[in-house]
Image (tube, rainbow, N blue to C red; front, side):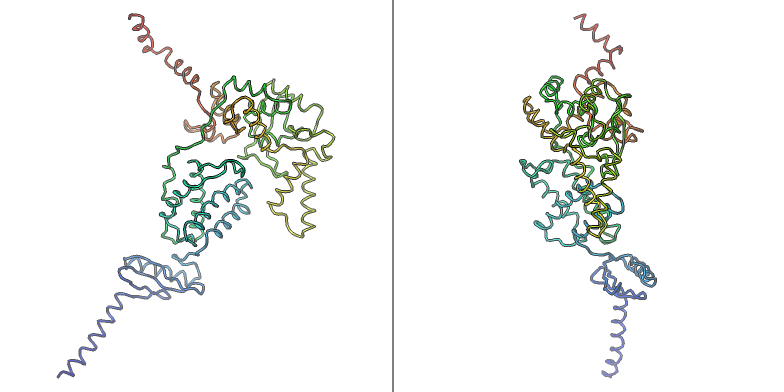
Length: 467
């Protein structure tokens, strides 16, 4: 009797085990699902590697994903939950290569992206032990922000200047660049499909901008003092920056005879793609020259017909090369690129092309923007304004002067070289607003004009007279 009960109990126990196994496991073609604790995992092989992604506690969701992945494996498509683990260094190189060869971003933009993401790489190497981008989560991104607030950097990238903490705008730019980098990682399936961008979760739009470099505009007397302190070489340089709002890089790349028209008193800011130089925003523009500026530049240029408008100090006319006009300079750069490719038996990269172009501009007599900055610092120190170190201040001054004169916003945008779309469809002037600083006198004048005919002002004056 006991043997009969035992023989009946064994099939019953085996059946229960099979039922329990079926409740904790199922298979859909090449995909097997297993329940571990309260979470379902899928298991399959893709491109010779075993994948075991975590799904979640819902069995129906696990079954739907198993069916989808099995169908993708049958036709050779990438599975829905598969992704390629990758290190941050390799991810950055792929991302920058896309900007280099596909999007054709400017060399300066790529340099800024590389410098911004270098902070994240340095953080992972020194503070965190994270090796793969898929292991970086929101908590790590928050720790990275704390790290950025502790480091000190050299302003403008100059290694010999005194270091200071990163300003809020600098931190914001670094984080926005990292967010874009991780968005690229998500599109290229280097992150788990269910992972969120760790830098998106930081809500960068709500990051307060408190510690910024304050822009202090020189007063009219200080502007006069600055110009009176200029020597014969400095005066045309800084007068042009004051009266045109040019970026220093745009000023030094002005070429004769194309970029100055003394008959119509026009100054042209052009992209020089064939000479490997472009305007920062790619927006070409023409700026009317005031008569006084036209006369100064006419004296500066003299009898010269070719070469840069602003030549280096002590750069004599007879030293200008034979290819100093624009078309000849373009042909000379093309010849140098061909020589490089034939000598090295390789295609000239953008970096090498940029190096050859910089060498050509130097031989042409161009002034380096760092020289403009040093000359500006010497002048401001001479007039007791040592804190005024950036020639870009004169661009801020130009935009503010236009606002003081109630110049139309669209004209302001065009003169500054910003996108005109930023001034359409709203009250914001976009980037132009960044350079515009409303003076107290302008506010007072505009306020008085607004209430000049208002009955409230009349009542107030009558009350004052009656007292």
